[in-house]
Amino acid sequence: MHTQTHKLLQALPKVDVLLSHPHLSALNPRILKPLIQQHLDALRRSILAHSLATTYPKLSESLAHLKCPENSQSTHTLDSRATLTSHFTHALVESIAHDYHAHLTPSLVPVVNASGVVLQTNLGRSVFAPALLDRIRPILTRYCSLEYDIAQGKRSSRYTHANALLKALFCPEYEFLLVNNNAAAVLLILNTFARDKEVIISRGELIEIGGEFRIPEVMKSAGSLLIEVGATNKTHLCDYERAISPNTAMLMKAHKSNFAQIGFCEEVDMRELSALARSNGLIDYYDLGSGCVADIAGAHYVAGAQAEPTLYEIFASPPSLLSFSGDKLFGASQVGIIAGKPELIAALKANHLLRALRVDKLCISTLQATLEAYLHDELDSIPTLSMLTLTRDTLHQRAQSLLQMIESHALKHISAQIVEVDSLAGGGSLPDRVFASMAIALTSDTLKANVLESRLRREFHIITRVSKEQVLIDVRTLLEGDIERICQALSTIESSQSTKD
Ligand SMILES: *Cc1c(COP(=O)(O)O)cnc(C)c1O
Image 1: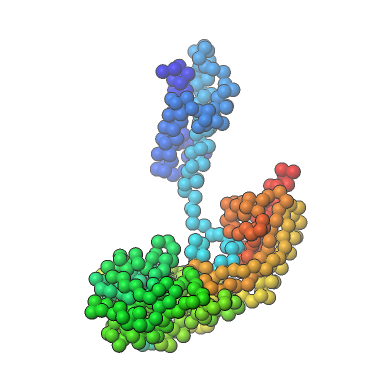
Image 2 (image 1 turned 90 degrees about the horizontal axis):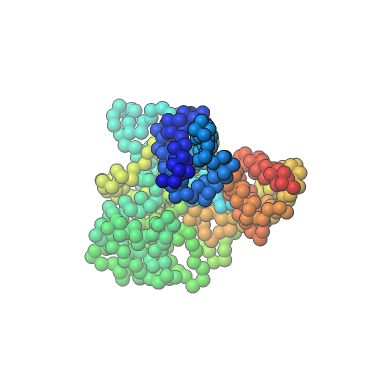
């Protein structure tokens, strides 16, 4: 081995020395030790491959300033070795600490949604109001009656809690069941009633929701046989009627949640489908996707789009079974809500698959708090609905206060103005509706729009969009404290620009 290489290897610090280094000693040693070993190994490999200059450029530069220890006296060599070691230690400690924090800093963090898209699956879908959170805090921080009947002192079922409220709100004759999410609801329903049996569905409804949820694949997983009828744009009642066979179990309708068809198109109303199913002794099931309680006013419809019935309207003449998500327009947290005739819900409860899809107390308590808000008509405490029903005046006021606050920072390089924009409901809901909104359009004379967007996102977790070389901050989806956070971010970015002047 080359003496130089040998000297470098000899100078590598010991694991224990690194473990007790003042910059590392406060970190969890169980996680730290393997990390130190990895970094030492990598450095060792790099020395052996003579590639320090490329893999550790900073370190290699600082080593280049040292005297080569090769030709030195023995005492001098020792000294040099200590110097080398301290250079290695310095470089290693820096990169180990960086890796430790990069891996272990929680990555699930709050963000500012300035995109204007109210239900963003990527941003956690529906937001939960702080006031409702206060109601569920004691349920989560204490023991609770999850599966306990307090009056009888006996075991009971976790499904009773939301059931009573859901019945009272929507349909006293029906029973309700909760599962993990709406995808789980579809799976459980198909698996319970249509295993090895045929399910008839329109070709126009073989939807993909995103995140790999596709109706045909879910049918396959549930063991059901997909019978598609009609054409992509048009399906008639007689298409379903003709497809019914002795092996048919169910007529299913799926809501076209995330896309809209306009023009030459036609679908069968669920009530007609229910009547056909009942006269043939079949189950009628409606996968509603996003159940909405309120009529979302204030949105303008794309020409030809159909009105979206509210849950109350659907429950006026409900299909035998229906399901929807709790965290789309319903505004609670992730849960799949199934409603159905009592004997059908009883059959679902008897399916062992339910155990794998069961909801926990966190999910039940957030739903319960949301249902209570609905019961008392406190629609203001459902942020999803509040955001979708903001008036033009409120949006304008909000934009005005954000603009004023930005202007009060007297930014030199960033300018802001109010613009009118369109926002969306998102999250696979109301695809054919556009919500007129207001935004602050930011431009910078030193940063390109996409650079400003990226700095706001990466350094301050503020999610915006870029349009026509402007960064748009849609005020519809801003929550309490967001305006201050945005101003803070802009002035920090501004001062980092100014110091470069
Ligand atoms: C969103 C949606 C689903 C999936 O619901 P999750 O709650 O996301 O699992 C299923 N079907 C339809 C029609 C949907 O819109």
